[in-house]
Structure formats: structure tokens, C-alpha cells
Length: 77
Image (cartoon, rainbow, N blue to C red):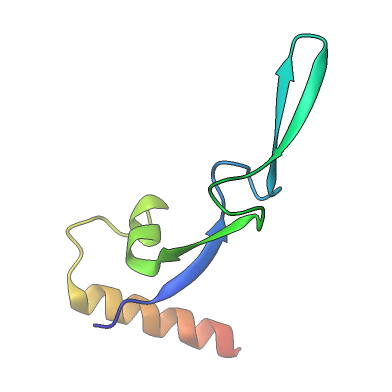
């Protein structure tokens, strides 16, 4: 099965694209180095499904293909 890539919200900046750092009396704003200030990162679909708890890491290729078919059908509606 070909690896599918999807965009997901950056966990580091929570989709903002920047980070705030409070250093006592002042606050600094920095670009997020994880997503290059985009707010999203590209992830492999399989890894993201595992991280989100949709499938477990022992899922078979057939289970993943069936899930992808269901997702594609839902997107067409």
C-alpha cells in the first residue's frame, strides 16, 4: 500500500504558526520551528490514525484499506 500523506495541526504551536515565550516582564513571539510557521505539518496517514487512536498499531493492511474506502465514500457525500 502506498503511503498517504496528510496535513495535520502542528502539536508544537497548536496551529498558530508561532510560539509565545514569557521571560519575566516581557513576552517574545517566535516562529514555530516544527511547522515553519505554517500551523500544519505533513504526516503519514497510518501514523496519524495510530496517534489519534482510530486504529491500533497491529492493524492489518486490509483493515486500513477498508477504513480508507470508508473515508473516501464519506468525502464524496
